[in-house]
Image (cartoon, rainbow, N blue to C red; front, side, top):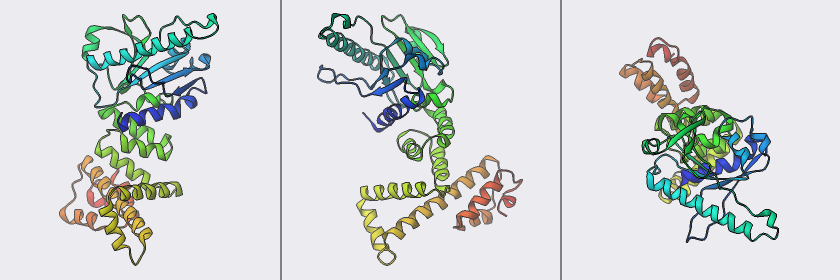
Length: 319
């Protein structure tokens, strides 16, 4: 399983209980004994009554004790074999539950139900629409029919931007992912936002915007996290680390790291300023562009960026 999938699973694990007020919890599913047949996760429904008021698909959890979840991130296959493999994993879990309950001491616990499947993906593939009936049970949430078990398809790209739906929304792709990233960044902890930047397939433009937004703050947590990330990157690149050490012999490696962080913020601010000018069709002259490139004062660049939003000319922004 790739890092985007792990990130999506962590989001479910971290957010499910908070969103549902403890009504639903996430659990890594047990491995099923067919060499290795294992779904992405289980939603354990503890308090069905608490999810009734939440947006779809959460109310559908009321009628189940657990739900098998399959997560498909941007770039993952959504073809017929991919869905069939998901159905095989659901069936394996079905058999596993039936065998487990059959071994229970009390015959009253014998389970004769059907394991539900929630399939979370960016969109509904055309072939599925052609082969099956999709019955809407909420915005972008469909009951797939015919099916002998509860089969729900959740199309993340079309879900509304709601705090309660964040675990599903991380499966978005393309422009829908960019929209979600901009919306969710102020709502989530810094570490989660940095994970989203690192592991999801958002556009380079939005990635730069979020990194600039994160770096703009003066929160000590932000600075500590930046230092931690930079040190981790240096650890993974010994050649770069050695050069930084050589340059930092007199001033110390810590100052070298701080300098690297500051230079990164300045570069991101320049990039953001140029993007705003371009979007507003305020083309700077070669001399004005040289001023932008030559400015290493982060406060000045941020002031220019704010003025660029309303200025009538590039010269007016650079005052």
